[in-house]
Amino acid sequence: MTDAEVLAGRVLDRLTASGELTPAWSAAFAAVPRHRFIPDTIWIADGAGLVPLHRCEDPHEWLQRAYASAAVITQVDDGHPVGPGERGRYITSSASHPGVVALMLAAVDAQPGMRVLEIGTGTGYNAAVLAHRLGAGKVTSIEIDAQIADHARRALASTGYPVTVITGDGAEGYPTHAPYDRIVSTAAVRQVPYAWVEQTHPGGKIVTPWGTPYHNGALVCFTVTSDGTAEGRIVGDVAFMRLRGQRFRATIDDDQCDETTARTRHTTLAPYCVTSEYDASLAIGMKVPNCAPIYVPADYYPDCARLWFIDPITGSWANLVHRPDTSTYPVHQSGPRNLWDEIENAYHWWCDAGRPGPQRWRITVTAAGQQVTLTTTSTVAQPTA
Ligand SMILES: C[S@@+](CC[C@H](N)C(=O)[O-])C[C@H]1O[C@@H](n2cnc3c(N)ncnc32)[C@H](O)[C@@H]1O
Image 1 (tube, rainbow, N blue to C red):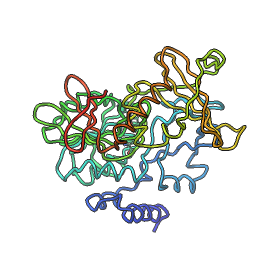
Image 2: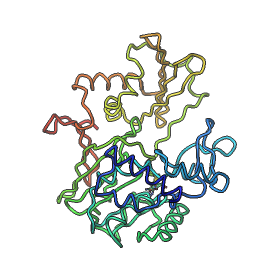
Image 3: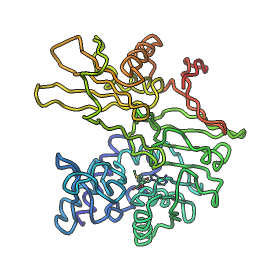
Image 4: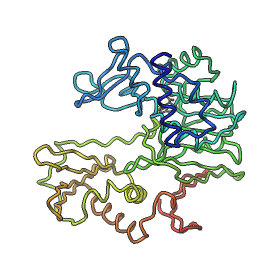
């Protein structure tokens, strides 16, 4: 047995034991050699950013990472590193965590013979797993980055998986091969493109990571109905890079975030309540648009961190310092929005609503746009966003 086969066997055992890998996908997982899709240069964190790891320099480490319980970063900053010392800052392509691949495939629920469109080809690995189960000519995959698409085409050809890889913007789907039984996106959206609904058979499914700027971490499974509507439920907790046209990048600009000119108040709502509780932060994201949290550990005090909330569109920001030894936190707010007030109100709304979890949210997509509603246990109740 080669080292790669040993490592692949361990991944298979781990995912089978945890129940993440369903029997339907187990043969495809076992057959597709993940390392043959991983480019020779991958990126790893060094504390100051993302640095390249070249296979030729450390083949052992490269192979370990190809089969680790983690995503493998395969591109940074759209191919042009922007961080200090040519480090990468943003992850712009990766081979997803094997557990997440398994979770998404289970949600996609594709049967042999079905036609599938994948958005975000990346390495081509997920497309190969799909093609192994669905058969020749059934999988189309679209990738926006030409170099990444070329790599995937080569990897798929050399491993013998017949996938059509298109270079283009997956937000438009790929009408030439439509209609599809399933569309699966491996890039996250804030708004589901209606083209995906139009290109899916009635009764078919769309599976995509979905989120708000505040909370990027829900896997949503939509069913398309004959009247051209897609009804979605949250079926998992995943965080993906966003579709290129739907990125939301919030950064802290030290020159503009001047606390001395900001509005100041105090709060007793602990910062971790609004960021670390999955259900709360999901709900806050539905209520507070265009606002992203940024957590900055503070090295001057143990267990202390500064939490920022940024709306880059209006230039509004709020911050507060989390300290473990206090129950009152000073808050600074600046710009046309009082972001902390909005967040606090949304948190209290969520508590008053009975602290709803992900299973209570529904996302509906029609030609007119996307609507998010909170249901009671059985019926749709309150429109929110
Ligand atoms: C998480 S990676 C995909 C992982 C991939 N499925 C695999 O098995 O390796 C997300 C990919 O989506 C691509 N992407 C981002 N925006 C896109 C868009 N609008 N259309 C098509 N691909 C896009 C990125 O370039 C990136 O390669």
